[in-house]
Length: 399
Image (cartoon, rainbow, N blue to C red; front, side, top):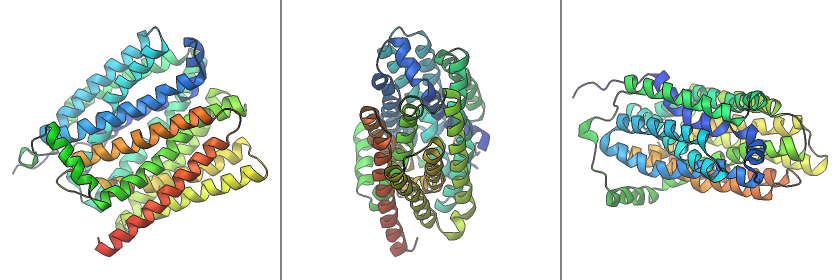
């Protein structure tokens, strides 16, 4: 068998970050999008919730299709769709059409997210994959972490439309990079037929896999807590608490990203030494600690911008440890269905968890930050419990 040419880390970062960047860049502009289209903030917030739904549904398709046709072709198709969606967002006349454009954008962007993980899992064992995914994520989140900061400045300079121009240009650059550098990681002899019957068969098998289920629940809860924060903190910061401008909010997001990157660095450094599942449990514990303390502080003396974001930074650090490690375990639970596992895990993570969490927060978050804090607390408790169960499964199996 010919040696598989490995995509470069730069390529993996490029295809993975573009969809996440596009999702985050509008966060400081939600109130202004609502104002420009003459609608409510709750409706404008749907551009984030439905972005997650589009990503979730597309992952169900792209993952299994990549098991049949390979990773490269899915990356290229997704990149083209992403650029088309970005252009749509620039020329739409209504909030409904804007949301449709965002969904198209999300469908294209998610291809890189799924394929980045699948390519890594094609090339590495579980512990090495966890370290690689952590390294990839720590690099990838720099750009999505900067996205709210850029979006805030773009909003101050010209408006959210400038953010969409920027995203479209980046999408074209990533398409060119992928065309020249997205080498195939799944040899033809390891592929298998993909049709709707087999697609659902793959999902059915995975949903009977206890290890896959446990860590998918953990990653879903942990990611949803983070996405609920992303979706709700802008409303808390700018409207409910009136703590500052969109650009200032972007700076708080940037610091959150630094803590998330720190968690990924710790995972990359120690996953192979102490075990991926132990890193995962430590991460969920740190995240839960931050939200528990935030809940107690809010109920006793109230919060300032520093105490609110400062305690949420523990969630960033913990999630940097537990999301990458949880993903590596979940998508490696069945070595014959890595692409399907990446798609299903990511779909549940963003659709069943993230979209629902951001929608709940957008509906309930009107007068105080408490609905956001309570939502994050419940999700972090769920993530910790799932991680503890998963660690027990792996310890018994001596993996």
